[in-house]
Length: 443
Image 1 (tube, rainbow, N blue to C red):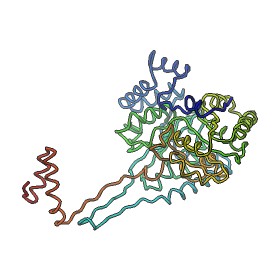
Image 2: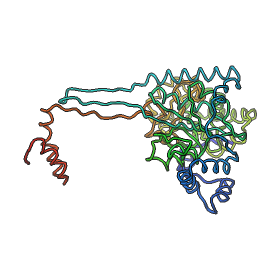
Image 3: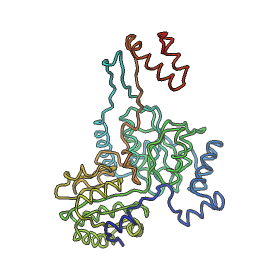
Image 4: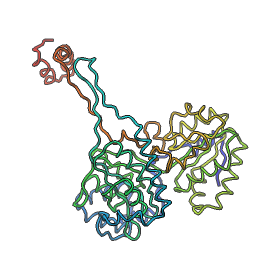
C-alpha cells in the first residue's frame, strides 16, 4: 500500500510536484462537466461559465447552479437569525466547549502578532507606515457532506483580530438545504451574523461581484475544492484573495528514536482527507521506515475512510530513506509541504534546516492534528510547494499598509532636483515639470 523509496526513486515519482490546479480530471467529474457545460468542458471553462452567469443574472444564477451542482433547491440565501442563535443547542455540550477552547487559543495566538504603525522624523519631516484593516471580507468555509467548523474559526478570528469591521461567511448547504449546526455554532462563538448558504464557484462569484442578496467583499479567504480555488484565481484582481490551495499534505522528518505508531497515525490522519492528499516520511532509518509501513497496514483496518486512505498512500504517499537527517531536512524543505513534522531526539536542532514549510510541528507531542484544531495558528496553510514563498493565513492578510509621506519644506526643496532629473531621464516631462514648478530649478 505505502512503498519505501530511495531518494533517487522518490525524486522521479512522489517528490515531483504537479500543477495543483491542473490535476487529472476523474471520469465521474468529466461526465458531470460534459452534462452541465457541454462535451469536452474543463474545470476552468466550467468555472468561467458559472462566474459569468452569476455576474449577469445574480441571485437567479446562484439558485440555478446550486440546484444543478448540489441538488439543493435554496430558499433564502441568508441563514436566518433563529437558526444561527439556536445552533449551539443542537450540538453536544462537549463539542461546543471544544470549539470555544479552540477559538480562545486561536485568538490568543493571533493577538500576539504585531501590526506596527510607525513614523520617523529622521528623513526630513514625517515618513511612516499606516496599517488599516480591510473593510469587508468574505470567508469561504467548506461544508456540505463534511462540514468543517474549524475552518471557520481559523479564518474568521484572525480577521477579527485585525479589526475587519464586516466579515461574512459563505458555506455550502447539506442535502437538506441547510447549513450544518456545527458550522453555525462556530459562527455563533465568533459573533458572525451574516452567513450565506452558498458553495463552490457560485459562492466565490457572489462574494466577488455581488448580487441582489449578497454584497460584494474586498477580499475572499479560505480553502475549498477545485472549483472554489479556480474561481478564486479567476476573480483575483477584482477582489483580493489569500491564496490558492491544493490538496492537503504532510511531510514527516524522523530519526530512529521516533515512535512508529505515532508517525503512522499522523500519516493516516493526513491521508484520510482526500485521495489526492500527500503523506511522506523522510528518514535515514530503514528500521523506522519498515515499522511505520507495518503500523500503517495495522491501523488502517480500524479507520472508516480506509479506501480513501489506501488510494492516497499508494498514489501520493511514501517512505523515503535518506543518507542522514541533514538530507531528510534538505528534501523536506525542497518539497515545501503544507505541514512538516519533526520527530527526533532533538527536534529543535533541525528547525533551521527546513526553511520552507507552511507549519513546523516540532516534536512528537506537537502533532499536526493539534494544529488542525486547537494549537493556535491558523490551519489555512500554503500547499503544493507554495510554502517556498507563501505564509499561513494570519492577521497581516486582513490589513493594508499605506505609506505616509509628509516632508518638511527644506527636505522637499533638497530632493526635488533629483526627482526632476530622474523624471527627465525617463522621458516623463510632466513629472519633471511638477517638481520644477515648486522650485523653478534647472538641469
